Length: 611
Image (cartoon, rainbow, N blue to C red; front, top):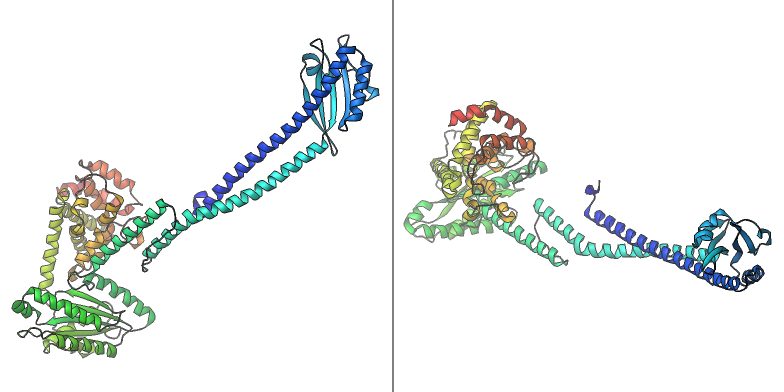
């Protein structure tokens, strides 16, 4: 129950309890001190009376003299209610003198025996109606021997009322003081600890929600300020790495991976609002000839200039990306065909004006335009804009063609994929490069691919899906290309900062592979192969229901092969049995329970087959 309370409530409860305990201790101590002071006063009064009576009794041995003293004391001391002199006679104790003449000659109470026999002083309190009495008994001494006792009844009502009043006063003052201290301490702790922590939590929520981030500036303790500074640095470091992963290094535009992400987001928004969205597919004309005639450095300069021209001639909410090579794409939210064509013509015109820097190869641009949902659905709009762009090039270049202008008979159109195939081979080579970079993962990608394919087949997936999962297994760690060697090959446990960097490799891998059209179906498997059923995985903390099946398969086989292989942080690989125990421990939390059970059911056959 206590663990569910907020930090503010916990601190307030703890301070309240501590202050109550402290104030209760103070009140108890003061109450004891007051009562003890009254008691000492009564005892002091008894000692004075006892001294007087003892002196007179030893001097005269006359009970009458003692009676006179008792009467005098009763008359003089207003709080004295009754006094009795007990003296031993024939082994019994009798009252020989008293302010109450009716008691003279009667036997003493057995309750007085501690005083009458051993000489101890007795004190007791008596409450009768609204009167508070104190009964004190002191020894009567003759020649150093206790021969009786002096019994004294005092009216202590005023002292008792005063003590009670002071105790209530202390209680009230304690409560008020405690309340004031609680408020003051709560204000201080809230200002120095709670509010700074809430600011950090709000900043974390801002990042999670994808809102613009502002520096967390706190006026707190040095330690909290250092945490805030470290948090700001971490955010900007992650932001820098994220921006780097979605930015084309040459032009500064977004890259193709970010284009695909934004396209899906904007299309979803467009469907909800019922508006239109336009897509430009742009290709620089004669760019290969320009590179041949002027060189690649000049070609890169032209690409940056064209990128700048496109950005200047679209709106701030439009998304401009470099798709690859000399190709650019532009997403225009809330734009119909007429408005989109006007923007495309303006871009084409500006490029044509600024593209005459090379006499041998004037630069122009061909643009294909497609509008969603008018021309195509979300699966076809990229293909349709691309086709319109190729139609513009085939009609003489330096022109804008909309999807509605495409010939209905153009069924023989096929985009050349030589560059894509070459890029696919390059990506597969990158999988080899990961193993070269990380010497501890020898054949890891191939083994994960084989395990994943066998497991997918045993589950009953079709051949096409098995092939996709196999390819994802081969390429699942390609993002480690972007991880520093110092982290990738570090011996021993990674620091929290190093681990956060290592956790970026699925996103880096997604961004690397996203430019290959043929690999679009495996991208979710690469991106999410470190997610967990309990939602504590990365990069997005998805649960089992939101994680693709292929990614859940990769998570199991990747973990198994990693555990049974030597790693920088673990020189000795686990045995197969030990690795199986770890998989079983992680069922339902780290790993999909059904996938683990299926994998363990075929692991013996799998080991023989793959070995």
